[in-house]
Length: 169
Length: 253
Image (cartoon, rainbow over the protein chains, first blue to last red):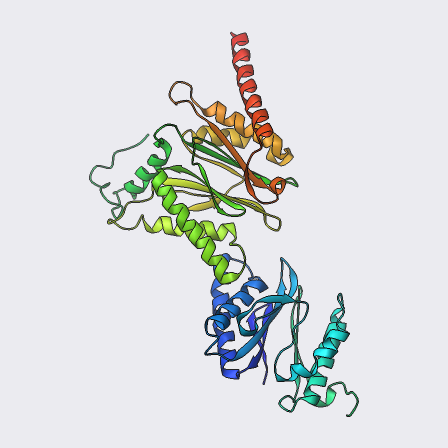
């Protein structure tokens, strides 16, 4: 399943938790951002998208069970990543979530560096996913990667056998 | 010259045969002629686009400006009661936008929203249009200085410089003469004060008190009263240049 859902041209979100809840939130925010960008007459800020997601997540936190990571590019602050777990809102250099994330906290904390190039970032992400998919029984399959920058948005799929391998494989 | 719309001016929901809505026009006259109980009100705002960017606001009389958000300010002319109510509306809009979208409302959008609200009151006979115009100004480091004006008919436009209230035509003429791009903040304050003194009519208007405030890079995006020394310098400059003009007129005779 493609867990990367577009909220706007240059803003995507990563879904985790209950698929139904997460997809519904993403669809609602997609609609709200569409209206919002028409009203203000320009592309929305990533912060706006993240706030909209957070407002829903927080208001219905007792009923919903989903965590969306919102990331994208806007003119004002460039590339940004926001976590919205349980209704909080915080900007981070990177974010991980979902069942497989617990296995890779150490990896991402050790391997992340500021100012990585686009290719290095993509490699970092693919490595992280591969390690998580290897360890987590509930994860597997393919890796979807979306790269967003000033020039545009690029979607990529990396099939199972093309993923990087580590020890034990 | 003004015309009387006999019979077609009783409600805002009626057009005259030549396509005018007189109630809205009367509302705009209310802005031009309004007085507070003690003083005349006239507002002037100037925006300067340059490295030292700012928005300036000068007004005669008190209660001329109110703060909507940290870097957004609203200056009003017209019926004060209407203006107060509208400033609450503007604050509400700015606040709920902030709550929903996580960042400060862009001034153009705020201006559009308030203008829509004002316009709604020009559509029905059960309510009267708002009798006030206002100027919205803001400064932030990404968008720079911005200036928007809304009038009782509900239109809003962006401006480099504009004036509302009494003598706004004369003030507008003076503003157009200014070469704003080449001036610094302090110079602009002086020019603006001079304009107020110029358009103030000694005979017809009552004495006035000049209130100057600004928002811009010079204040780090906060709306503040112009500091006392700058203000005094500006008032002195204004008075001096008026005297010079009087003198030169006498010489010509």
